Length: 395
Image (cartoon, rainbow, N blue to C red; front, side):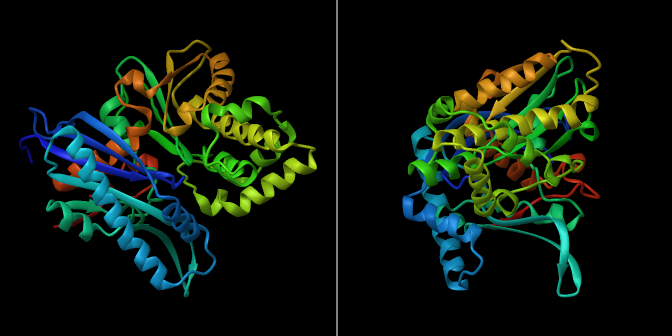
């Protein structure tokens, strides 16, 4: 279905639960029926969650027991916050938004089937009431993107590879696009690839463990610029021990979240660092090294063969996005691990998209695809049995 350009706001609040990113995009279908849409980022705004809201979100994610009333109220409160954020982002740009794609806040994600009440089920839950956003803004809202992929046999993640494929594939250059949000996820695009040659999966924790260690040990939400990690000592035995855990060797497609790397993991991780004689700064340095080494390990273990890198100095670009791309210590560790493999490390800004905006742009695109009844999942990334239209539309 071809049509005129739409102004679409993509709304993303990730596993770090630190706030909301809004990307306002102009998207159109191009000149050829069925061609990849054309996306122009008009502007990006980032909003921090109020401290009490972030505490409530984190509490809902890691809770062993929480009342239905608390979850319901959180769902509606986040809907109001998302509406506020879109209103402010659009006002800053002086544009009228015609469609919103809201990922919502994940409070539970289980991409692998487990037994429940006598049957095997997958499950995912993102909160942030879409009806509130639609009523406030008086525009359609696409939300709840992940369940359709789960129902089709996929893991419901990652979903960003559709944006990677549409915007960043190249006829001449192999690109590995690494998002460093709460969780790390990558998309590998061999030069000139078709959609069935896309590889994508979650590499493990990115900022999630670093941020949690900073909160517990320093009373700060994150390690600005990697300053704490830079003065610490990496406890290599601890990193190696974690990388022997089953998630890292499991074959893609795969996804993870707070269920694997949340508060329980952080407690065990800090205990392991203490037993190894680590100081507070050493814990943060080791958490940062865990992120970097899990990414490099994933590249060596899974991506190298997939992209056909038969020799050093192959033309491969590693493009980092997300909040972790601002962590100079983390980026230095990634360069140290990847550049000897012939990989050029770049930042997403060099390709025209601010690092922190990328996931929000992805959900603007996915909303546009849903509105035009086009599939939004990349089957090779999620493991779904078929391509499906994602999300639910609220008017």
